[in-house]
Image 1 (cartoon, rainbow, N blue to C red):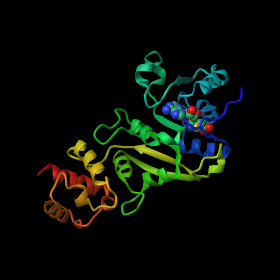
Image 2: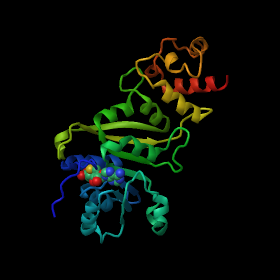
Image 3: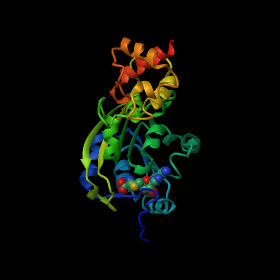
Length: 272
Ligand code: SAH
């Protein structure tokens, strides 16, 4: 049975073998690794993963693809496939009968781009509620624009709330470009391979929950100055004094503050 790629599920099959090699190389697979893959599709990456790692757990939403994968790899005993929406599934609960697949230490995947943000959040957690178990590394194919946002530095137009939130929880690196022509059907956007390494931040925020909402509010209107975006929580004059103490100009915008400056601002506002 020929399976027509579904737009709804963001299906674009990777067809360049060199890119597969590069993903595998980036993940630095060891024979003791237990991997989670989101969106195995027809299984090109899947096969590489279960042959090189100790175990592979893959989660696929599309029932027809699940059937195809079971036909192809159903006999492989270090491979487990879960059918369902990665964002909705309670994986830990589902794996109670398969505990050997539960403690994955790495994620390697060519994911559906329409849910990149939520996938990263499910893997890393949030500033106020980081993931309980820190993964060793996460290697993903993502839309190039998103990759740029993840690694952005301050004073750059790609630097946004996603940047600050992810960089609080992890180090991110773009490994290489992957052009649209390396997929079938060809997506409208180019891609990159990214590597995300979760880590604890040195000197975390005193009140992570407050920092979380401060970032959201600060970036709520990108063109406005920070003092205008934060009006609902602090008066302009008072904020100007605080910014001055933090060596920041009163005209700054959210995109001008480094991660450390966001944390300092959050700590100061909180102690008022
Ligand atoms: N990894 C494959 C397919 C990538 S396309 C390859 O490289 O060729 C993205 C895949 O994610 C598709 O198979 C799609 O069906 C699946 N998918 C989409 N939404 C999903 C979700 N919410 N949970 C799990 N899988 C999903």
